[in-house]
Amino acid sequence: MKKLETFLPRLLPWCAGAPEPLVYQALIDSAIRFCEETNIVKYITDPIQRIEGVADYDIDLPLQTDLARILRVWFAPTPFDMAVGQPLNWIVTDIGQITIFPTPASGLDTPMFVEVSTKPSRNATQVADQLYNEWIEPIVGGAIFRICSTPDQPYTNPSNASIGAAAYKMGKGSAMTESTKGRVKRDTSVRMRPWA
Image (cartoon, rainbow, N blue to C red; front, side):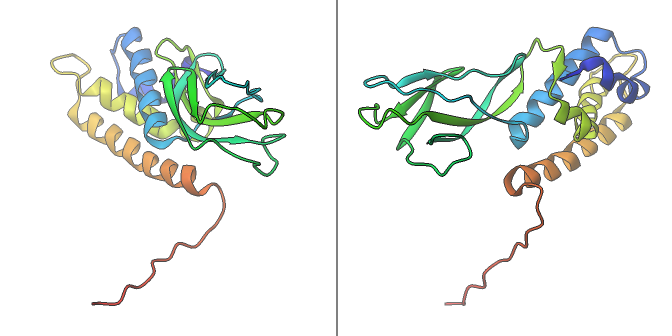
C-alpha cells in the first residue's frame, strides 16, 4: 500500500495554493472513480466454507478498501484449480456480503472463492501499490481536474483542469483494456457480417 503523500510531488505543481484536505480528498475521489470504472484492482478472497442452508457470506476485503464489483464466484479446492461448480446467481446484499443462489444443499466440502474488484474507502490514507506504480498519471490527472475546476478559488485553472481530465481519460482507456484482456498480447478481430 502506498500512502497518499507519495502522489503529492506530481500533483502539487499543478494545483499551487490548494488546501491540503482538498488535495487528499481529490486524490481519493479520483482513485475511487478510476477503480469503479476500470475494475483494475482485483482481489481473490480466501476460501469461504459453504454451509448447508446458508446463502449469505461475508467477503473479507483488504484494509482501507471497499467493494467495487463482484467479478466472479466459483467452487474449487484452490483458487487456481478448475472450477467444480458455481452458483447460478449472486447479489451483493450489503457492502461486504454476498448472497448466492441456489442456497447450498450439497457438495459443501469444496470451498467458494470470490474475485472482486476493489476501490479505496473514502477515509483511506493509502491505496493499492498498483495505483501508484502503474496508474499514477490518470489518478493524479483526475485529482488535478477536480481541484483546478473548483470555481472562484485562487487555484482555479481551467487549462490545468483540461489537461488533468485528458490524462485521466487516456489512462482510464488503457486500464479498461488491461482489466479485460490482461497483460498479454492478443489479436482482436471483427468478424465480417454479410449484407442481407
